[in-house]
Amino acid sequence: MSAEHDAPLLRLEGVTKRFGATLALGGVDFDLRAGEVHALLGENGAGKSTLMKVLAGNEQRDAGRILLDGEEIEIRSPAEARQHGIAIIHQELNTVATMTVAENLALGQEPRSRYGALDRRGMVRSAQQKLARIGAGIDPRRRLGALSVGMQQMVEIARAVSERARILVLDEPTAALSRAEAGQLYRLVDEMREDGVGLVYISHRMEEVWQLADRVTVFRDGARIGTRDKDDVRPPDVVRMMVGRPVEDLYQHDRRRPGGVLLDVEGLTGSGVGPASFQVRAGEVVCLAGLIGSGRTEIARLVFGADKPSAGTVRVAGRAVNPTSPRDGIRAGLAMVPESRKDQALFLPHSVESNIDISSLGQHTTVGVLHRRRIREAVSTQMEGLRLRRNALRLPVKSLSGGNQQKAALARWLMRESEVLILDEPTRGVDIGAKSEIYELINQLTERGKAVLVVSSDLPEAIGISDRILVMRAGHIVHELDSHAATEEDVMFHATGAVGGDQGETDE
Image 1 (cartoon, rainbow, N blue to C red):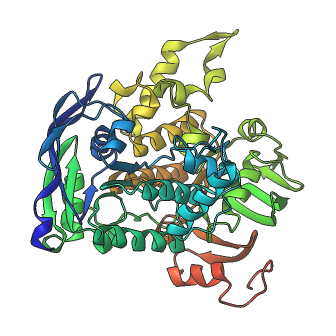
Image 2: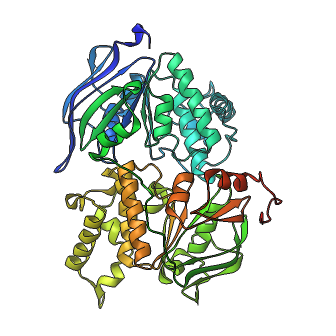
C-alpha cells in the first residue's frame, strides 16, 4: 500500500455503547485509511455491526469520538452520515419490499419535473444507470418484494455505490449473493479501492476476506482484540482470536443411523417447481442444494404450507398433511426457519421472549389462562441451551446480532418439539462460532430422532452437515448424492447440468 494511504481517513476512539445492562462496545478504537479494505471479524454479538451502526448514525454512542480527516464530527442520524460521505450496506436488507426497484433506488432523492411532479421516467433511467454500474440485470420497474433475496441485496448495493461515498461499510454483503453476483461485487470493491474509497468489510467468509482485505481487525465480546496486516496473519490465528479457542472441524459428527420415514413428499408441485418426491428419515439430515433460483426454497415452502401446492402429497410420520397454510404444517409437526429472518421469521419490535414463545402459547394454557411463569422458564431453558444471554429476555429481538436472532428463530420451534425441522439457509450471515453451535444443535436434534431438511448455498456446509444431498436444477430434483462420498464438484456438476440429463429430468 502506498504511503499516501497511511494517514487515517477515519478514526473512532473509545466508542462505548450499552443496550440496557448489556455492554455492546467497551471503549473501542478503530481506524480506516483511504484506498484500503479493512475487514472486521468476530462472532455475532462481538460488536462489529454495532460499531458500524454508530458510524452510520443508526445508533448513538454513549461515549467516545469520531474523527474524519483528523477533525471530530457528530453523527446523530443516517442523513448526517451521508452528508459526511459515509454509506452502509446492512446485513439485513434496508429496503421497502412493496415499492419498485426504481423507487427504492430513488428513495429520499426522487427526481422532480420543473412543475414539481414526480419524474417517473427519470427515476427509471437513473435506476438503470445505477444497476448497470454494478452489472445487475434487474428490471427497475419490478416490485422489490418479488425479487429473490440475492437480487434485493444487489439493489441495496447499487444504491450505496451510487452515493459515491468516501467511506463504504459492507456488512455481510455476499451472504445472499450467487457466485456470479459476488464476483461482480469483488470487482466493484477493487474499483472503489483504486478510487481512494475507504471500505469496511464485515464477513464470516474467510476466503473472501483473504481475497479482498488489506488489514484485519478482530472483535470479541464488545472489545477490539487486535489489528493485523492481512499478510502477517493466518486464518487459523484469526479464528482463535475470534472465539478464544481453536476451531478444528466445524462439520464433525458421527455417521448417523436413520430410523423410519418421518417426512414423505410425493409429487409435490407448485410455485413453478416440481413435481418433487423425496423422504427424510428420523435422525437424518437431508440438504436441498443447487444454484440460486433452482427452486430449493420454493420446495421447502410448499412442504411447510407457506405456499399452496397445486398437486402432490406430504406425510409426517405416515399421516397425510396436505398443507395449505403454515398452520396446517405446524399442527402436523412441521417447523420452518425461513431464509430471511427480518421479513419472515421474527417480530423485530417485540421482545426476545415473545418471539420465542409465540408458537407455543397453546401448550402453556389452561382454560384460556396463560401460565406466564411456566412460559418464561421454558423460554429461559431454550435460551440457555442456545447460549443466548438471559438478560436479553425482554430486549427487542432487533437489538440482537444476526446470529443471535437466528438462534431466537430456532428456539421458537425447539419449544414446540416439532418432529420435522426445515432450515432455509440456517447460517446465512452467521459467524464461525455461532455456525458451530447451530451444527451442534442439528446433531442434537438428529440424536433425538428428529428429521431435518436443510436448504444451503454453502457447499462445504451442505456436504458437511447432511447425510444425503438432493441437487435441484430448474425447479426439479435432478440427482441424489451420498454426502459422505460427495465433493463440491459433484454438486456443481449436477446443479449446472454439466453432467448427463436434460433439464427437468434426473441425471440418473
